[in-house]
Length: 255
Image (cartoon, rainbow, N blue to C red; front, side, top):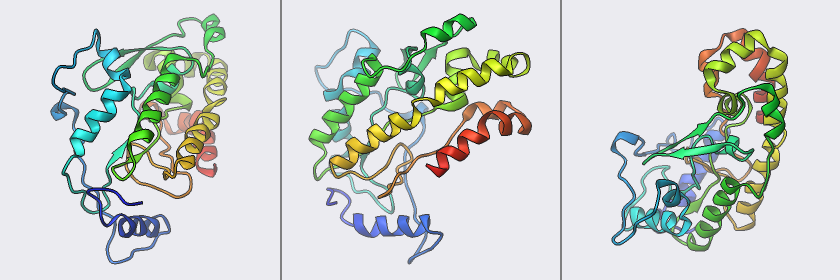
């Protein structure tokens, strides 16, 4: 893959592949990245306005063009890559099932949608969901414009307990684990039902366009790269972690 601003792409990828295999070539991989929302610049291009922040987030042409402007004339050092990953916020997987997102300048938040157990019947994954279609549009436009300039990744996917916490409310889920563990397991099954289907869909689209497997962390793989995570477990005991999340974690890693 030849990319402007990254003439040593092949060498960098070899270092990362060695790292995946518990080996070191000439040195360990090194990544440089700006990652502080407080200092992130707001997207602005001359003459562009939107009726709402959500509209701006969903404007695929603008988001990709803004990214292109951000990497113009830049050189990417070490194992850092010009990477566009479609992003509508960290709760987007939960939103694929019918949740609504509220948008700020640099992130979004989900409106919790399971207020009583009958609400579970309304939680359903759909490819016609506006958030799924939004990620599809961002991916499509990025793939149309990426050649020789940048890599395209897949979106941030939080399934399992993070998805359940998005639907239910993290504080309420803490109580549910004590009071209604069987209901939590039912929500978990629903959250996990389409996770691998969604991942494989994005992986297939990217691979069909010659892309590697990569997402927000910026570590590419020729195989399948995923970052297992469950932010919710920062609020649980080890026992709860092992009962409610560890089986999902093990399945994600094996896959």
